[in-house]
Structure formats: structure tokens, C-alpha cells
Amino acid sequence: MNLVDNNYGEHTPDNLINDTTHPIDIKGITLKSGQGVLARGTVLGIVTIGGKAALVDSSRIDGTEVANCILTDKVDTTTGDVVTTAYVSGQFNRKALVFGGTDTASDHEEQLRVLGIFLKDTVSY
Image (cartoon, rainbow, N blue to C red; front, side, top):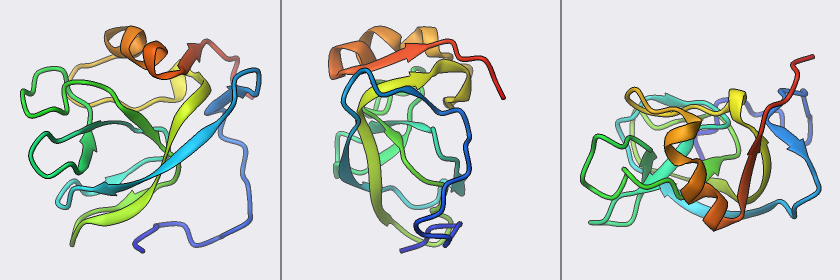
């Protein structure tokens, strides 16, 4: 596994999760290689051919234009595909999310809500 931060079991508050009103569920995913380092909180789409996850970007037409999940950890995909986890439900801070291209939370909020991912504005600490 190419997790960038190997401090398993430790938690540094990063303001990604807004609260636990909605259940927080995760799933296993395979990140497509060649995307470099993806930050925790990166919103991902699934490439239609091959089923691997990549940074969501509404200007694309390969499946990644549709939001599917949120990356749970910082991961380096530079040298190959990486099997990791992503959030598939929960309530998240819209300002802590990372999108591709010029996308914003507003571009994907409706689709994320359908999936059970809810976005709120959270005050940073």
C-alpha cells in the first residue's frame, strides 16, 4: 500500500468530517495510477473502463465526471495503482474537499447527496 502517511491509528483533526449525524461508511477502491499524491478529502469518480477511481472532474467524459466517493487518506499514485478506502456516506465539510479541474462542491453536491454524502459549511479550528 502506498499510503503517504504511515501513522496508523493516529488522528490529526483536519476538519473533513463535519459530524456523525449521518452514518460514515467506507468501501475499498483502486486508485488509477499516475495521478500523483491525492489528498485526504479528494472527491473521486470511477473510470467507466476498468472501474478504477480518479479525481472527479466534470469536464471529463470517462466516468470521472460523476462524483462517487471521498478519499479517506492521503495516497501516492505516482508509480502504480493503489488499493485503499473511500467514504461512501457521511456528513463532510465542503471547504475541506478537493476537486479536479475548476470543479467546486456545488458542481457535485446533488450527486453526492443521492449517494448519502452530505456537505455542510464548517468553521475551521
